[in-house]
Image 1: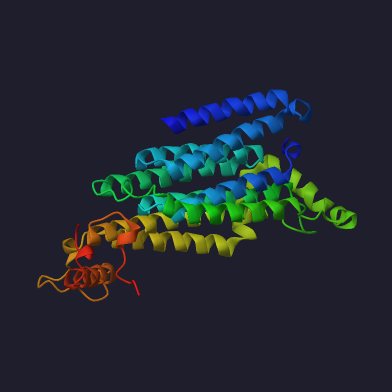
Image 2: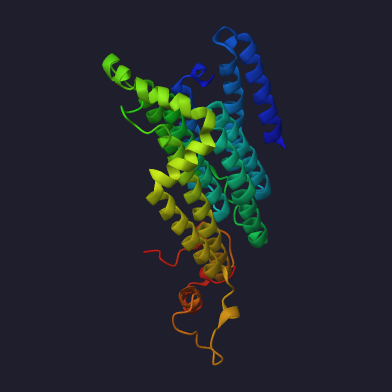
Length: 109
Length: 242
């Protein structure tokens, strides 16, 4: 079924979403919006891994589920990252009374 | 609202495109174009929406569409996992974060200045062009290499129909160590998140106000106290509350 869609299309879509997430990380000022953009980039990488797993040419003798296991681990790491990120944002909000990454500048050189 | 209309218009255009251009390629490409186009539009909506709640809702739609793409890649188990983890947990956590920090909004005033966006747009478009060129020039494997990979491809096809079973066995046998490490990482990070997010004064352990040594909340409390002290003793007025 999925052999119908070429691998390059998935790669282009993943690159597109990754670039959009990068743009968001660079332009948004609210830390939660930055976190959302990071989620976009993580999902793009997941899509890439899975497309390579399903449609790419595997190494000879490779285990059949490598890409799926890799993606599952990335999803788990993403969940951990969001939990810690939200906690850090709340601490920053409490300290600086502001939800704006440009104001967190106590380490400004 | 405008972006929602944009998304539906995009779906419509993709559907027309499917009917007009992709008819001879088989049905899956048209479906792919529709799902992927909607996903990219939802990503754009996430990044551009001024209201953070709208951003989060676009993000939920994006997660769902990525799950659809996972299904197109025949990884149904991961699609379910994507919906459960990302929509069920991550998006809700982000909503909580938005609700807890909503009343001071730094993002609505200056975020849309051209000066801020132009360099970012240039960098992003440049990176996309680089990636697209790299994807287009991706070399094909040699014939012999493809033939040597044929047993692996066959094993992959066999596994597809019993994915959860095979995945569970694989996680317990071949990838046991990474699996356990990820479990440890999740536990540690969630405990750390809880410890970080405690209100500063609410958890002084000793009766005399000194935190007991070795307690879980010691480090973050000290940390936030230090940061808060540094903030308030700073001579820069813009660091204190606006």
